[in-house]
Image 1: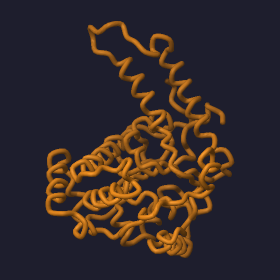
Image 2: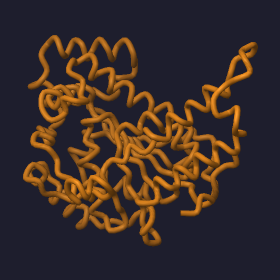
Image 3: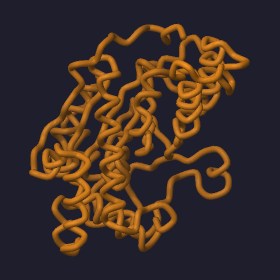
Image 4: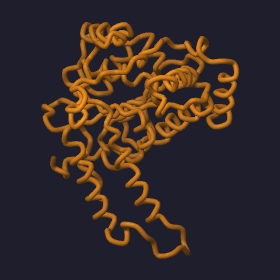
Length: 314
């Protein structure tokens, strides 16, 4: 891949707090012939910390020592060039083979934490942020922490609520850094209640033509029951994991739960509900916006600049 052409123009990042429905939305969108996808890459969990380390070691307060780290050996331009080359190599399996007009949908929920870095290295990439009622997310996280997700999912309601806050606030604070028309926030509840309508909005956001009939077919093929049976739009797995396990993603038992908005009322104890309320009230005053049944999508009207044809010079 030519590093000079690495702008992210053919990349869409689907982000959100884990257990917000991103895999379902990924499967729905992947039915479109112009959208290619794959298993979570966690790409910016490799790249993002390196960029953050550079900034922390170069933005020093007055009166500190002369500095340390790679800035003692590289100029800023040289470092960014090396990082872009690294990113280009890592993106090669995703972007190589795309036909004209096709885009790659990269779904890693944790990329919500790295929107600032995505905007800096891939200024033309688009972001879809899926947000779900925090109480339903907490209930789902607690459930999977007792089964297949015990190695990563929080085991206490207050920890799960803090995870939701971290992902949602990070995505929202990063949104204004993207050029106009490159950030779309989608409510899970809207997607669940009127899936075709939301898919229509997303297809406009991605500049894709998608017929009502094909969208309806995508919804039927990826219903909760179909997904519980291990069916639905396949998500390919390549590389080492494709050789070692399976060339198609196999979800663990219990991955698909109730999916129904408001099911937290059946799942959370009164103490867990209190913990969620307390964490959200203390850390995110606007959280009720995501828990009052509101619907609709939000774009980023205040973005400061237009997407360039090439990455900005570092």
